[in-house]
Length: 425
Image 1 (spheres, helix red, strand yellow):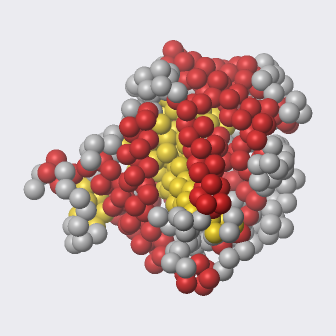
Image 2 (cartoon, helix red, strand yellow):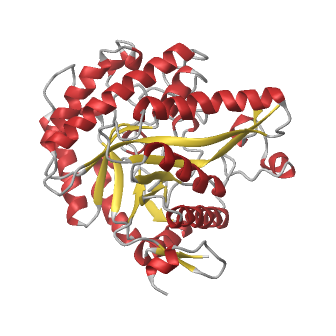
């Protein structure tokens, strides 16, 4: 059976699922979560477990070692951040040449290792001078970000051809202005949430034009943002209030954000759409049925809800999400994040296999997916949850000054997937 025939059939037990040639198998991180020694709104933020991001994984100094771990994993792509607060100390100011050189060296080492970098320009953090003017609720953030991005894209055009403008503006806006768990810790300010999304969407479009005009010395340049897609549903469909909450969440977190960033198909400067997918949230008596909302795993299992440490797992949703987004946006897609947080490596392996089978089915049915990035390369500072959530392919010993890394069992599984461009079912 040739690859084209294999791709045309749904996944079956006992079958090796092959992925398209030139498919990108990567992993992903963000600056605040792994670098440490950072000066943004998260520096003094104390997570639920009492921790901060001040040292985190110390990847600011250990990036060369991390690249060697990526080589052991066999990935050919890495989605990483470049921290705006390190590069620019004032609006329209020059880039910090020392910090630029450090990131350039990291990019050079990645390219030399055959690992294509996808650079994220904004991943939940801002320079202090942006936060001082109200962050992204202030339209002045738009020209400031476009200026920064223009300078950075120009400086690094010989090292980067994949640019990711914004990571999960939906999560950033929701957690910062609706549920109050990210700085600036505001609650139920829908007006501010919608302002943030509108302003980021305008900046995204302008920066995508800049990226395409600037080009890349490595080949065809790619520009897009990453949308986190979560299914919001009522646990009991006949419950009108739960159904209403789910519909409202879907309309604002999914639909409004996607329409703001992409509008009509064919009328965006973006060349791809990043999709982050983890699972779904169901509501019962207006409460989200999640481990992070006070429900034990045992309670949830009795209700037929299988979760990792954060979300309900729903692999079939990845296939339907990709099909829906493909119809609406008509752009090539990269799954820029997917992963699970658990200390049960057997569970994580089942989750990965289930989601890659769903991804394979979506591709077989015509969705143009060109890559998959596992979240995350290593255990890290998981925002409001601190170090209590373990998403890594690598473990990190946070009690050790050296922050020593080690391969987890799932890392070995993922290495086989990356090297074979396939996964067995």
